[in-house]
Amino acid sequence: MRLAERMSHIGVESAFDVLVKARALEARGRSVVHLEIGEPDFPTPRHIVEAAKQALDEGWTHYGPTQGFPELREAIAETVSRTRGIRVDPRNVSVVPGGKPIIFFPMLALLEPGDEVIYPNPGFPIYESMIRFLGAKPVPMPLEESRGFGFDLDLFRDRLSPRTKLIILNSPQNPTGGVIPRDDFREIAGMLAERDVMVLADEIYSQIHYGDEPPASITEFPGMLEKTIILDGFSKTYAMTGWRMGYGVMPEWLVGAVTKLMVNSNSCTASFTQRAGIAALTGPQDCVTTMVAEFRRRRDAFCRALNEVPGFRCAMPGGAFYAFANVRGTGLSSREMEDLLLNEAGVASLSGESFGDYGAGYVRFSYANSLPNLMEAVDRIRKVAPRWVPALAGRLG
Image 1 (spheres, helix red, strand yellow):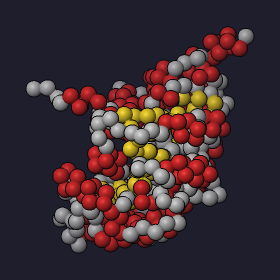
Image 2 (cartoon, rainbow, N blue to C red):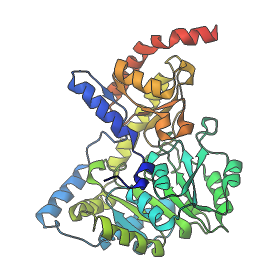
Image 3 (cartoon, helix red, strand yellow):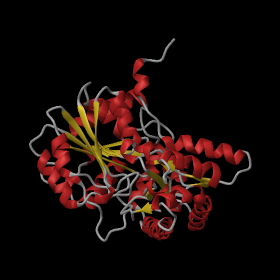
């Protein structure tokens, strides 16, 4: 037997590949600082854990509604309405096991072979993986460091075509930490107003930002709510990565399709985790405020330290918990740097090319680790810098 031909088009998430390599080094006695995985190092807040325990004791261990329990969908609708300044109904909410189904299910429901999808590059690798898997055409939008890892709106206009079926927007962004300005969203909304196109707005990091104002959402602008799928969830905001619970907010006609796909794949999201989700959204939010403040402290110290490493240049991210360092000044490729840092410095990172061709020359570090560990990582990087400093000095000379 052979695998179906479509399996040749599906990709992977490189963070887990690097994690396996790092664990193998640790098994041989090596010390590794893990900056490859995008996972908060905070525990899930106590009141959320207690709600899950209570739910288990009360028997929330059986099947629930495929679309999600009404009480959770109501809490999600209220939260999304309040945080985006829009009006969302619980009927527009689909609860799913993790955020990725809100990438896969809507794409599966919407895309035909040959349809075009505009997506950010460098970007979350599952976007391009799913586009190719479904036989659609990926159309990358380069994210430029000179634009704060935003993209050229004139180029975006040029890449829109009659075959464009879906636009993927991610803000705050993985891997760069970039935040799309409100004025850019306004222009994008104007370009799409008269087009028969859907938008997948990946807002999983919406609560992890460092500006005075929360990040904008494309749904704030006239005509966009009815053609947008908001992807959000609990993993990043509430340190619930292992709980596997995300949600999508979308037009009701698309909710029906996503529900059918859920029936055929997962039946439903675990009942007791949904009870914990209600506690997360309706309970105290100081846990989120505290976590984001700590991420800001780490961001400031880590990025400042990286900028002191010869050949490195690291812009200050506006959201999420990633530093996307430009390493072109070292003379090494991003993949060479990833290997060198892991095998010789004991620092696990991700090559920018793991996120697409336009990530070449960059390395992503997750600063969702303790400040002492982050400073230890920079010290280790400095110690291996002599590997590239002679070449750097030669070019400067």
